[in-house]
Amino acid sequence: MANLTELTVHELQEKLASGELTVSEITKAYIDRINQKEGQVEAFVTTRNEEAIAEAKEIEEKRVAGELRTSLAGIPIGIKDNMCTKGIRTTCSSRMLENFIAPYDATVIEKLKAEGLINLGKLNMDEFAMGASTEYSYFKKTKNPWNLNTVPGGSSGGSAAAVAAEMVPWALGSDTGGSIRQPASFCGVVGLKPTYGLVSRYGLVAFASSLDQIGPITKDVRDAAILLNVIAGHDEKDSTSVEAQKKDYTANLEKDIKGMRIGIPKEFYGDGINPEVKASLQKAIKTYEEMGAIIEECSLDIANYALATYYIVACAEASSNLGRFDGIRYGYRSPNATSLKDIYKKSRSEGFGPEVKRRIILGTYVLSSGYYDAYYKKAQLVRTLVTKEFEKAFEKYDVILTPTSPNVAFEMGTKSNNPLEMYLADICTVSVNIAGLPGISIPCGVDSKGMPVGMQLIGNKFEEEKILNVAYAYEQKTKFRETYKPEFKK
Image (cartoon, rainbow, N blue to C red; front, side, top):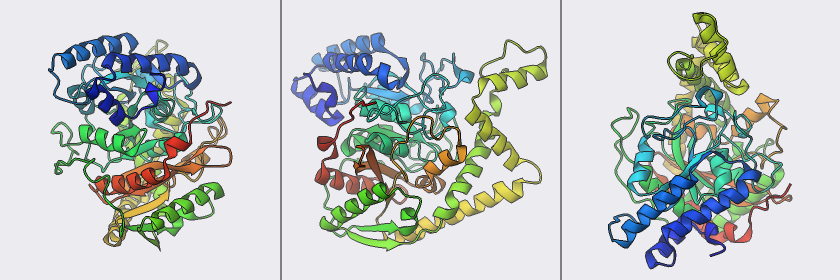
């Protein structure tokens, strides 16, 4: 089948069940696609071609023998390289962990293995998940399949680019301030950031522990719901994991959204939003009106404070979390060190890239004596206000609709020398992490240059089924994937 890699996961499931396709055929098709496109896109840090083929053969034998209990067995997947995978390199795209082979699996990886999914490899990212463009990887700069001169977004840029380029049918990413949703927006795919605590973080290398969350990047909304079914659930190994009621996130996808109340916060549609992005969003809002949803403009003035709050909290936690990588306990050790002090200094200087150093310095500053109350404590107070502001909004609305990013994907190199401009790329997404809410990005059109525009739907805590329902309704109405495809142009 020539277009096998174009299929969604639920389509692959159907073809496996009917016997139209075998696990080996699917796996080989994706490996061929990786071999064909990886040179252009550079999405992978580590590939597992031979191991994947062997696993596919084993699963196929079990399928023929009727020994499989899961319909997902044999479906390939890609993993962002900050999730521990036993016996496979987990680098966080950093020199600091270049040769680290995890001795255990993250909980999400255990869950994927239990379903029989085949890991095709580890995907590139901004170093330690710090960045919005995947230009801060130690190994390579991932390109956006829609236009190879543009960035795929970050930090889960490798995951989003691999899905958009059809090198994997779906992937796992992690989201600290928009790192699933923003690259999904830039690459024209679906990215879901679940409620904080819904998916275990055990085995995820921490950037900012109170903000990080693992989630799916997929071709369509149904696939996002299927993958969330697999990875969601309480984990006693993660102290922040919540004992939420088990749900089937595919159950309400086709529910009519007539009468659904959608809030449009005016602060997210101000001067900083690209006019073409705004026009696509306004068209999407009109589509929802036509489908019977109740649209109402509202105010969320926390948008003005969320970005500063996020960067203070995130950098403070990054500074603390990355303290362990000192050349003695964990990570790269400089061969040039001549004393204990030298080991610390040179290992960290040589092991970390510029963006990670920048955030460690900023985080150490806001936690230091004399500045803790002025910055970190104040940011935590504002965080409470942001959470309350959303709680108030969700008393009135089912879902809040905003742009995912103020812009479409920008050209490589245009913002990497201007950290402040790069940080502003997260302005629409960070408040969701601060409040621990679920958010999904889905494509809602393209700009005049053919680059995808993302729409973000935000829900109340543990109401993923609502945002998935609203996203699915729009997706079915507009058929983005049938209309537009990445062109790999330069």
